[in-house]
Image (tube, rainbow, N blue to C red; front, side, top):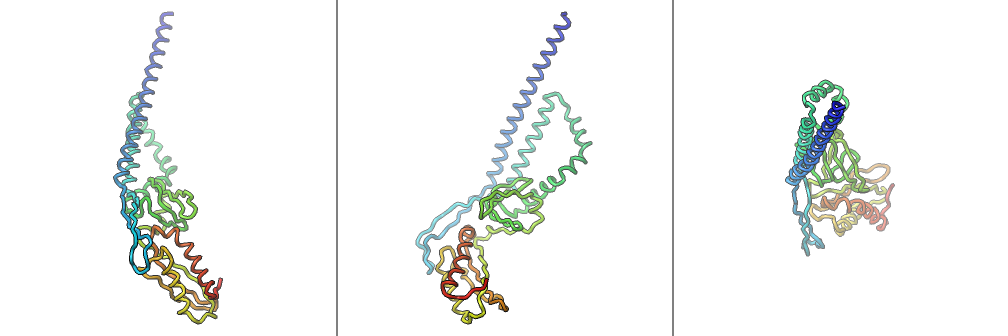
Length: 286
């Protein structure tokens, strides 16, 4: 009987000891998560840039600026975002092995097991490994930054987040959140719409061949553009004949707009161009 009581006491002590180990392990992981987050965000904040942009408000067309407004444009380097992500996972992995030692589990045996199953794991996460490699390349090449507007294929959006696996865009028209694997971006043609301060709206309209006075048509369009808020005087807008065929005369209109204003001005300006031609009784082709 005494032996059984002793065994029960030993078993109870073992459970208590293991329980304490588990609690300590959980506390270590929680503390590691907090520390990793602090370090990761610290690295992330180092990469933030405040770009001062001077906007002319109520500017007259003769070049005289009545008022000026200063805004801060946020841009974050992908290198620092990637370093922040890597630092977080590195700290968590190290903490995981520390917890294994606390629990009395030999990490060498776990590493050996992972090594033995490495081929299967590699095949299973092949796509993710490709995303990670592409994410590192995108960060090093600095193709785009957080806060910039890019176009990948048919998708155009503002870069709102970046991880070593994915790039998160916010659609410029619908505000929908779009997640694109980094390998897809690396394999695509990327248009960065923000790096240059000026972006051009290019719009083609087809005018009936019955219209003979092209100089008048050009003057009507240019006058409208020069009196439209958001369209820059320098470089000046251009209106040129692009193509003449049996369908009609294709006129290409090119207007300079500040990059940060493009999303709000482009579509209304296209509508205004067409409506201006209609108001001036210029025959259009669909």
